[in-house]
Image 1 (cartoon, rainbow, N blue to C red):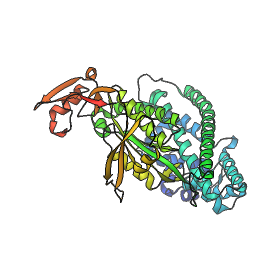
Image 2 (tube, one colour; image 1 turned 135 degrees about the vertical axis):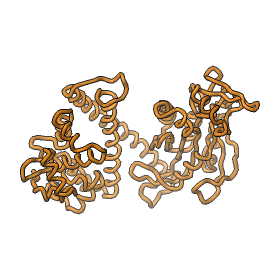
Image 3 (spheres, one colour; image 1 turned 180 degrees about the vertical axis):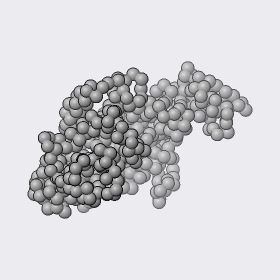
Image 4 (cartoon, helix red, strand yellow; image 1 turned 90 degrees about the vertical axis):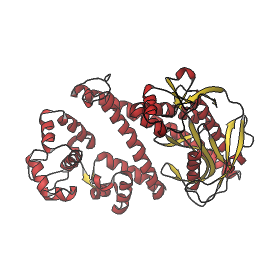
Length: 463
């Protein structure tokens, strides 16, 4: 157990001695003259509460009369598992693991938030022993650092999602949807335990699924290199991939007109549509930022097919905005679960340049997929793209045959509407505009000059 004076606690946490003395007087820290790692954690929590606008008085009141005390106990038990809540410093942990302190610190900081977690528990030490074993087996430090960061970011996000969803949909005192449960502390503990029972096997399951996929991709890269299809690279992590970006063509006006809840519903539908179109073609969702998805594919034909599938499926959705996308084929650099480099930037800029229901590709993609069945390419010419020095020759990829769907476009939110889905129509200066709701109509009538690109009536769209 780590023991320290109040002055040492102040030095460890960066809090002033005067503040810590006040917190101790209020019962927020230990009452004696010696403090330990649990007090370090209590200081961090108090600092967080205060930053979020919670007063010291409210913290004390909730600990005494509210639900904070059992929640705090559950948190400390999770933070320092095991009897006695054993903990040690980074230096002590390095000694126990048998690793040089400087190396231990570098690796530890790569997997955590660094100095903020200056106290390690038994699980931390167990994890670092596994890191040491991987290094002794020959895994380079650079690769280990990247892997630890990916684990920390990805699994931290997964755990954060579990906690947030529990907060929003289960814990009745959190505020939110009316259909969620209202539960007591004992029931909350039981449900949290059940969530852990689900989460840990799920993490292992999806990791194993991901590992088998990684093995499949590794075989492709190996054969491509062995047969001369790809030139070997001296740069670790450099690959030849098709990178694609796809997003909603009218996301900003949609969010402004519909509000957060409706926008979230549209994004949920869009996310499902993207993943269902990408997975069968061996594509991978690298990340999502707002309405934009960054995708990778082992070859450009699959990327083009997936993008066209997304456009077509979005067009068949009821009251849904049009999508757009861009595809480029070239070398990328793999780092920490992400891809970067000029090829990624080009694919992103191409998607930004695309119009509604349009998929743009580069000449490199066009050259690789000349014989793609059922797809034609129309030359767009060379275009200057934002952030790209040279002009890029672009082509529009499209189905040779599209089903004709008569749709209009709401000029306010950008939703595409079949005739039966139109809620309101208005004619101004001989041009008819259609709307998905009375709210969009109200916005348009109040300031029609804000929407110069409104629909002039239903159009025969290729979807």
